[in-house]
Length: 337
Ligand SMILES: *Cc1c(COP(=O)(O)O)cnc(C)c1O
Image (cartoon, rainbow, N blue to C red; front, top):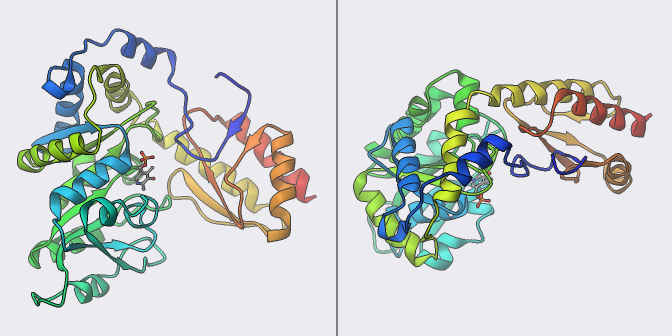
């Protein structure tokens, strides 16, 4: 650890450990725009096999792999169905609209994070010159730390396919969902024509995401990646970290889930605090507005960082342990005492 901060803002804050750095330092590399980087190729092949797809593509960020997928599935004047709370709708700068002339059709998320099947069906437009062409259903799993039920995913993707839509999963944290459900990664993404997976969240790599899909989709995606500025050269240096993360850091996500459950249970003991029950590594605490600023300061004084707001978000990851979370729980208790 490079500092003593206990950082619960996100699972993106992790530091690569010694073994991961060794893998990076010794990775054979080449020019990946020519397809010459053996480590990038290994990562892509490994990810494709792990998630059960023909091919995969390494890119600098999850925003870019999601955008590449949207651009590969949809053309100008097409639309994708997406949750109001989804990253691909809310948190990616409107990239699909700005760069792809693709219209999002947002749908209200249910309390469990899903999109109601009836709402999906109702938003699929008939072929008519008045409407954008509905091409794609985009789901997210986990969404706000919630795991979509397997039966729901099967029903939603079947509905989409029956109506002629393609399916994309923003699986930034799909490994958390699979570990929580105790299922193989390939089973967690069943029903999706493409999936984007973040290597730089709970898996602990410093940079990068992979997009998995059919050979044809990934070939198309490679074109978009270059256009978006995501064609990288000796990228094996960072791909090695992603490969290490997929090989070593998936099953250990269960520890993060246990740690989130521990901290949530401790915070729930504090009178007046409403704490959500974590399903994976993310949960929320309702903080009365007048407490936000002073609580943030009290926590910062104890070297604790959180995403403060009336819906305070707490995220566990591989760089926080139980003893540190004990300190966090005590700091909250002291503040509210
Ligand atoms: C983090 C995240 C992404 C991608 O984010 P980048 O910071 O661009 O890698 C996409 N979807 C979800 C749900 C995320 O949490």
